[in-house]
Length: 380
Ligand code: SAH
Ligand code: SF4
Image 1 (cartoon, protein in one colour):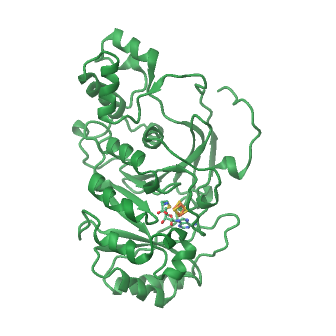
Image 2 (tube, rainbow, N blue to C red):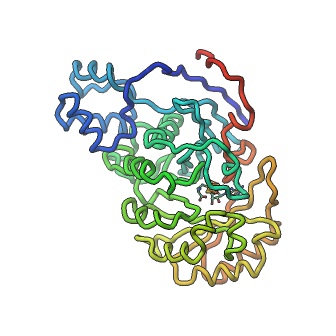
Image 3 (cartoon, rainbow, N blue to C red):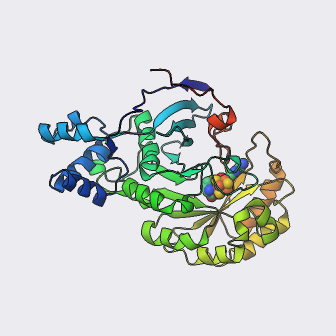
């Protein structure tokens, strides 16, 4: 395991407004407020999200006086990176620190010729799924759109993937950071507005230009928001099901008491854009002797009947203090076979980044694992 401490100089007293995270319309309004023409917003957008530029002075298509004026009032800023760890399997985890010193984690999971960034939507999570480390974190707040897009941008910084690869930034694949999964800390549909603004920025063809087909949002089942997510964003949906019966799901995913399985399944059936080419992923964490019996698998098949679905079986990732164990390999294989025999894809996901606690459900900011002394940060 490689451990690297990164301390960037913080702009504690910097009151300038960050341009990252503004929607296109808000960026145009910002330019109008400065007495500039709205097309300046288009130019700036290109510099910020296509080129990845943070220094106004290098934005050479903008007139010098305008660059100078902008630099007085505005910045293009990513969140700070407190630490970076790279796993034996090349998974990389950033502990990201925001301006109020709250922290969240971002993870990059490389594959052969591509890779996904797993982005957090909240500091902590208000939901208390009993198998999830993030759910034990007390401090919770929503991340802003800037903090959400900023996580993607700092991953690109880290791999030097600017400007946006491909002709005119067209999403033709072949990128190191090719996919986004909203599967980090927090429940994205409980911070929907900021998540939607951030994902629209990430999908914009004149900037980061990541196709909606390369984005998956994972929810524990916030039923009333699922429809808007499909209609406005049309991104792939993953649903953290984890149990086929309400009595068990009430315990594992307590939000089930508010939105029980039948309502959740109805919302999946109605999810706009779900079809055979774009199936809904049902995530299912494998917990020994809890939800891994053959009867559970058969119940699942009955539940998802008629939905364009696939399964993602996640071996339980342990964390300090967890009360569950991961199912045996035999139990997982038996479970997967029942689902595949039923006609569904049901891979058992290989855990990634376990040695740096970067795997699903292991995220929890280090500040809360190991309380630090409060004091000024060391200068870089
Ligand atoms: N809050 C959202 C997204 C983040 S969690 C949600 O719950 O869907 C991403 C996935 O990891 C979810 O399916 C979650 O249930 C799963 N997960 C949480 N803790 C886990 C653990 N300890 N081991 C394996 N998977 C876990
Ligand atoms: Fe929150 Fe998702 Fe963890 Fe549940 S599994 S506590 S919804 S982050």
